[in-house]
Amino acid sequence: MARKSRRGVEAAAPQLVKPVYRVGAYVRLSAVDKKHKGDSLENQQSIINAFIEEHTGLELTETYIDNGLTGQTFDRPAFQRMLADMERGKINCCVTKDLSRLGRHAIDTGYYIEKFFPSRNIRYVAVTDNYDSADTKSGGVMVSLKNMVNEAYALDIGRKIRATKQMHIRNGGFVGRFAPYGYQKSADNCHKLVPDEYAAGIVRRMFEMATGGQGVTEILAWLNGSGVLPPKRYFHSIGQVSEKEAGKHIHWNKGVIYAILKNRVYVGDMVQGKNKNVNHVEVHLPQSEWVITENTHEGIVSREMFNLVQDLFNGRAAKSRWDNNIFKQKIFCGHCGHAMRRVHYKKSFGFKCTTQAYYSKDDCTLVSINENIVREILLKSLREQATFYTSVGPVTSAPVFTAELRDIQTELERNERYLQGLYEGLICGDFTEVEYKEMKQAYESKIASLTARRHELRETARLTALETASRSKAADRIDTISCAEDLTAEVVDALVDKILVFENKRIEVYYKFSMEGVACE
Ligand SMILES: [Zn+2]
Figure 1: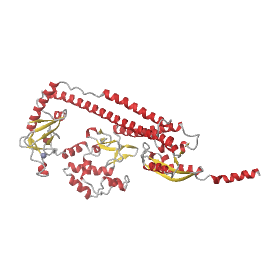
Figure 2: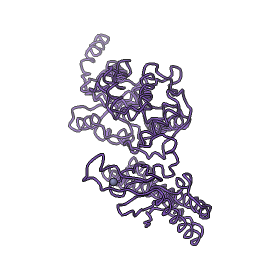
Figure 3: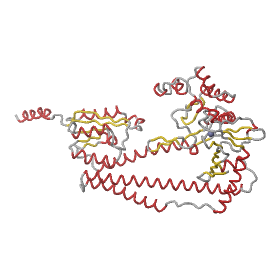
Figure 4: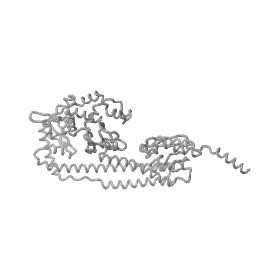
């Protein structure tokens, strides 16, 4: 009898266990994770599904997917949707593959696990970390610890990627996604460029045409006329880029041709670091900050040929008698801003603004000046500058804000400590969630503004140091040339940034050692 009744109870038991947990499966894949097979979306989902099947009382209600989003923030659409579904009772259990899927920011992740979920009776499971809030044996200290590790890991990965890229750039290693047209990445070293036989032939032909006196228009006609695929279409034809990336354009355009004919990569030099990522935005850097490494790979054209093409582009004929131009790339029209063309007079040279001749009469007036006049005026002005610099004495260095920087550092550290302490206060119940959030926001904005100020000061200090250095260098130079009889191209290039010429033969000199232009008659 007794045995029978016990059996009856046992048989009835499974019917009592109805699905009580409506599970929200949360999966997240960051751009970085895509390289690790183990964290693929499918893999995360199958681990969660297996857990649900193996445990009674769980029923999958909804799957929330954030694809390509970092765990550093909780501002992820699917995550927010899941929170909303929790609030309205649609789900009462959250399962993730591991803790890092929930988030990589220790303080905030801790907040959800130890405060948000418990206060709303949400069961949280991190499968491979063996964490289950319904299981009293798991969790606690372990969770906080794991969160810290995950956070450090997220910061570390970003830093490592940037550092590795910088290292390759410094060493002249190629870091772009695609090799420039004419090259391909070496099969055994993706940071090394090797010529792509076919495309290299096209590039060489383009340079040959240019040095042979043919203009970009003629090169363009030849390329499109002979059915040569433009770079992106060519990359597509050899399976390097998708149809979408290859774009619609099946013809070459002048911009692409100019870019190729001006790219030093074709003589075997690596030119990188033209852009920089500042807060997730690509910004172009000035040419002076590019990282150029010479002779990193096999050139497609000779340096002589390349330089000749550059000279032709700059509007300077490569005839040797024209080469003694000491004002190369220094003389500009004061009215329209265009570079002035060097012209040959009967016994001397001069500079002329060609805007009116090439564009329209409305765009500029007829500006021209004799080279000897520029020479005389500049020499006179330089001597005046020399007298001035010797009279004011050595350039003094500007303050570097050491004291303020130190204060900011102390203040930053204090605020960061407060922020850390805040979380403990929340866990211990010292204040409410609302108070916690308010205070957290206050500390965070304080930290942000301190960080911004620190950056500003460091930047100012850096620029001041640079200016001081270039000024004292220039002052030295002026000193030595002030006694010189005449100007040389080397001296002009070292001291002069640009010279503006105006209609009435008035000129304005912009020196490299001074911020303002100097008007001369
Ligand atoms: Zn002009």
